[in-house]
Image (cartoon, rainbow, N blue to C red; front, side, top):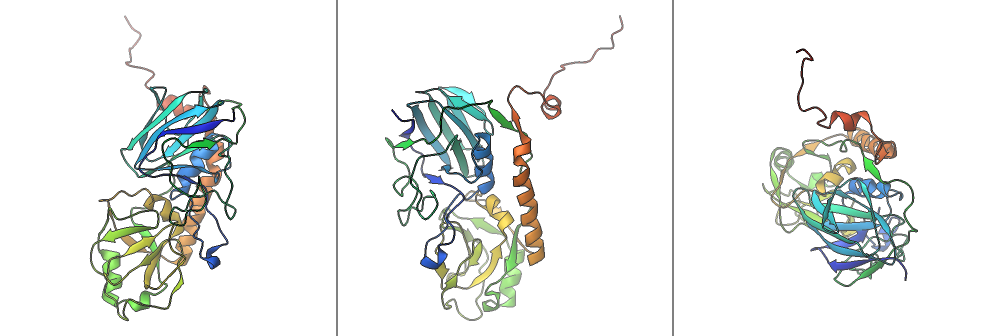
Length: 336
């Protein structure tokens, strides 16, 4: 029997995602892929995969799974979700080896939205346009092009786990208190007051947000030339403003072209954090130069490139772990 991960109870939206599919926008195929690629990288590296390999993306809650036909090594990263293995608590951001028949349960997110479960060797599914990322609206990629359902058995591609389990000692990725944007590409389609409103106002993530776009509610943004343009390409993070004058930040499952003006574009370095924002959370924007956006992207790339050096085999003591442990409950003078 080939090894597989059996879905006992799916979460509200569990899909297979990787680093995304690229080079197909001209044919109308969105990139899809993980909305938090930083968390995806952490989970994958902990089990020995390349950092953009396919993993399960959970939204707001995980689910229950069983390992069949062999052992498997897993790691969970991203939103703060409890995990248990055969009923025993299991830590996030470290790898765990599951015996055949083991049951894995992942709870609801206390903070954040999306968590990623990577399995050593990945999943044995056929790539579509070079990627296993799921695009549910078009039914391509992933496991039969859809979210997971109870009873699904995802075939595993990895051999038996080897080597020590790992834990992560890295600090979180660099973040910024505001969502940074570069103005455009149609900021001239808005009044000067609208630009000022975007940068000074406060917006709330709405419950209508999904993998296609983060819908916001807040101060209206006034168009200067109407809200229709000749359709053109949409970049990741484009902030489109339809006739209702409320901004939508377009994400991985976005349409490839659109006919509403785009007031600004969220910089790439801030998109992972945006993918973890829950409905009801508030945000503010800050305009930056293209040079600042490139520098922020470089800092995030440096953090990702440094992750392998921050993986420590379990059982190996280091200064960071010792300093974080309560090894002494009191101090005595030694006299008397």
